[in-house]
Structure formats: structure tokens, C-alpha cells
Image 1 (cartoon, one colour):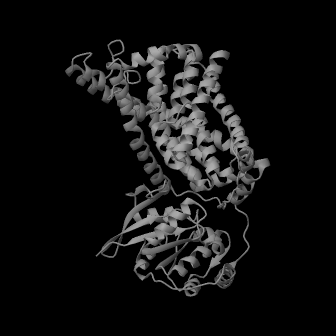
Image 2 (tube, helix red, strand yellow):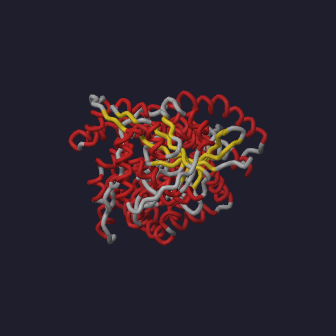
Image 3 (cartoon, one colour):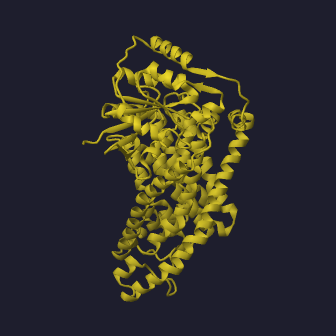
Amino acid sequence: MSEKKILLLGNPNVGKSTIFFRLTGAKVIVSNYPGTTVEFTQGYMKVGQGKDVVIDAPGTYSLDPTCKSEEVALHMLAESDLVINIIDATNLERNLYLTLQLLEKGMPVVVVLNMRDEAKHRGIYIDVKKLEEQLGVPVISTCGLTGEGIKELIECIPQAKAVKVSFSNDSERWKKIGNIVEGVQNLSHHHHTLLERLEDLSIRPLTGIPIALGVVYCCFWIVRFLGENIIGYIFEPLFTKLWLPLMLKINALMREGSFLSRILIGNLIEGEINFGQSFGLLTTGLYVPIAMVLPYIFSFYLILGFLEDFGYLPRLAVLLDNVMHHFGLHGYAIIPFILGLGCNVPGALAIRLLEGRREKFIAATLMAVAIPCMAQIAMIIGILGSYGGKYVVIVFSTLFVLLVIKGVVLNKVLKGMSPEILIEIPPYRIPQFTAVVKKLWMRVLSFLKEALPFVLLGILLVNILYSLKIVDFIASAFTPALTELWGLPKEAIPVLIVGFLRKDVAVGMLAPLDLTVKQLVIGSTILAIYFPCVATFSVLVRELGLKDMLKSALIMLTIALAVGCFLNLIL
């Protein structure tokens, strides 16, 4: 029996991903649709005696695409055997537009009326049998949060059928939707819940801005608290008590100072292995991404997943819309910036949410220059925090000022208008624990696959360059400029080289150079500004095109040169 391709399709924020995880479990694959940077998730489910492919398509409001994500959803529809159309029971009228378009396509469809628990709380009753009669296809009522109705959905999939309907224009389609809603939906009065009151407060500027500041502060406090405790109670003991003795035994088997020893173990510090400073593949190469960076990445994506599923991010986008227009962007550009704080790669991928070439260029350049990833933030705090909080503030204040100035300048210089924000704000919902955990697991695995190879490659490259005396040659050539303009020693040259591979590792490499606190501040700031890491660079090339990416890179290098000189002058 050949496997079928089942597509989950629906408006954004209808609980599509929750249904997907209920159908497929934890073993899923995250991929980019061929030729694009648009991600989709794929898994398998058992239907009868067979095993079918289930694809969670990007959210779309209609089959008339207005952005890249909706284009991809339309392409996926053409490649699918069956569609499970997820509908938000609290917003039936809006969701039925896509349903009728699917029926017009003549596709086998099963309609899932999701969030029935929330509809009940809002005083909305929908007669499922009448809706099924009106549409002519199976309709299953579900609650993704509790899993109610999922068994019935699986049993109903073989009964999916195509019902050909046609409408001459949009007016006729909306008239049909009105008749359906009037016939199947009943409304009753209900009192505002606590979450609904919070929805109102968080969208009004007078109360929303203080709430946003409080949310951001709490998020970063939680990220720091969780990160530091995971490091202190889990990874530090693992590396010092279990991994260090093994490394000492391996080092004893090799001749001290040999090429292999330098590559695998690195340089001994006063006869001891120092995971943060030895720069061996098996020491610093594993310690930095796993013990120093991963805890903060884990904490950040845990909080981000909660905010996504709770429904706060669209409200933050609307709240900041007026501010972002000064940068030539609309409020939804805050989403790539927030993702970029976790890792610049998903931040770069999220730039596809923006409509025009101008907006993508501005957002990409601002993110690459002024939005350090969580790994880099952790390293900057790690090396400067011991000297006092004011030095950490200097670095991040500089980046914030650059973000504002550069955004305003790019908006003035680049021709064009900033577009209006066009998003639908979902109601607040209590996130499903399993969905948040599964999303967290996928993101953490993606980070390790992305980060670990580049960390190891960077350390290997620097060790080889050191062994071949190439670093010494480059350092002697650039030392006068570095010393005069930025006040950095020649030993900082390898750091800048590694910065193109992994910025967080490069910041960590500043620690063993015996730099002054002024030099650490300058070095950290320049590394944050001067160029994106190679993984982010490759994504941005695909998203912007090589020509625009080179323009953006030239802007970054120019700003890094100017900021380095400025900090060297005033500090």
C-alpha cells in the first residue's frame, strides 16, 4: 500500500501544530521547502494498516498568496493527496473562506473544528452535524490541548472526500459563508475571563508598553537564572568530574606539545587543561557550545515557545508598529529580532515574513549589526561581568544606539515606503506543555547541528593557522592598523578570523589574551558588529541575494571600523 501525503492546512494560530504533534508524535523532520527559506514540519502517522506522511504547512488565510509562506502552502496543496483543514471554532466566519476555496479545488478534505473548549468558554456553540451537511465533507470537533477528538479524526481520514463547488466571485463566496454561520452557530452571553481582560490591557499603548517592558525583563531574568543554574549544577560538574579525567588520560598518551595534542587537547595552562582557554577540539571545542552556550539557548527557546503559543508575540508586533515605522519596517519585524536574540540563523530565516526587498534589507542589516545571539550575549556577560556591570552596559548600549541610528538613516536613504502591518491577533491561550517541549527539542537539536560543526571548524582552522605561522604573518601586516585605530594587540587577529565562523567562540577567545577591560569592551563590540557568522551569512545570501548581501556586509564593516575608532578614542 503506497503512502499518502496528508497536508494540514489552515489560518495562522488555529492550533495546527498542536494537531500535527498529536497525529505524528515526537519524531518529526523540519525542512526548508525546495528553493526557499520557508520551513515546514513533516512526520508520519498510522492510518489503518498503512503509514502516511503528514505535513504541517505554513499558515495561510486563502489560496490567493500574498507572501512567500502562502505561496509555499499553495505548492504543497498541489503535491498532496488529502487535506486536513484546521478551523478555529472561535472564528468560524473568517476560517471558512479557506475551507470553501479548498472545496472549489476538488481536493479530498476533512475539516477539523479545533478549540471547541475555548468556543464553549466564549459562549459559542456550533452544530457539527449541520456544518458537515452544509460543507458536504466530514467535520470533526477537536481540542488540541487535551487531545479530544483526535481518535475520531484518525478514524475519519479514510472517509475524506472531494466535493466540487464553485463561486463566480468573492461576494458569492462570502454570502455562502454568512448563510453557513447563521445556520450552524449560536452565541450566548458570557463574562470576560481574566485572559480576555489581559488581552485588552496588553494591546493598549498606555498599559501595553509597561507590560511589554515587564515581559522582556522577566524573560531575560528567567533565561539568565535558568542558564546559570543549568551551567552550575549540571554541565560544570559533568565536564570537571567526568570529561576532564578522560581528557587527562588522552593527553598522557600523546607527546606534549605535538601537533595532534595541540589540535585535540590544546595548550595546557600552567600544566592543566582549562576548558575555556585550551582551544582544543575535545576541550574548548565541546565546552563552549555545550556547557557555556546551550543552557542559555535552551532557556531562551523555552520562553519563546511559551510566548508564541500563548499568543503574545502578535500583540507585541502591533504595539511596536509605530516605532518600527521609523526604521522603515512594520511591527512584525520585531519577530526576526526576537528570534535573532536566540540565534541569528532563525532570525535571518524569519525575514521572509516581511513583504518587500527594501524591508528585508533593512531588517537583515539591523539584525546582523545590532542583535547579538544569546550565545554571544552569554559570552560578553561572562568575560565583562567580572569587571563590573557598567562595561556590559557600554557594549549593549552601543549596539542599541547603533540600531536606532542605523534604522533611521536606512529609512531615509533607501527609497520606498514602510508597509502597514497585516496580521490577525489570536486570543490568549494556555500553551500545551507537550507542544512547547517538542518545539523546544527541535530548536535545541537544530542549534547543536548548526553550532557544533562551526565551533570545531573554527578552532581547528585557528590551530592550523597558528601551526603554519600564517596567523603571525597576518597579525604583523594588520597590527599597525589594529593598534592605532582600535587599540587591540596583534593577538586579536585570530579572534576576528574565528568571528566569521562563530561569534560566540570568538568573544570567548578574547579572555585568555590578557587584554585590558577597555580592549575587551572594544573587541566584544566590534565582534558583535563587524560581520554575521558564516551560517547567518549563507541564509542571508539566499534571502537577500548576493548583491544586497554584499552591500549589507560593506555597511557592517564600515560601521565596525567607525565604532572601534570611536570607542578607542573615548574610553
